[in-house]
Image (tube, rainbow, N blue to C red):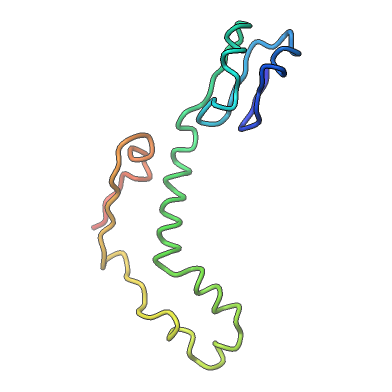
Length: 124
């Protein structure tokens, strides 16, 4: 058995493995596997579509909040010790970010990520 994420499984690699019966890609796709060579040898090629569905949805929300709350600009200001002593840190950021109650977030899409439990919520 060969388990791969994105390392190429070439015809040459398949040919030198006489006992190989399965190539499992723990990624969404199998474009890095020579499927023709595997098929010729009767080797099963499988993958795990949608394996990271929840992680991608969570990451989307994390990026959204990081952008909305200006995490990187705030980090830069925190690292610049001079600006804090002048009391001018927030002048560089403009208006404070809106709160959840002040905006509406709409997720548009359909598929594994759009149907993820992480995308299934409502805000009162």
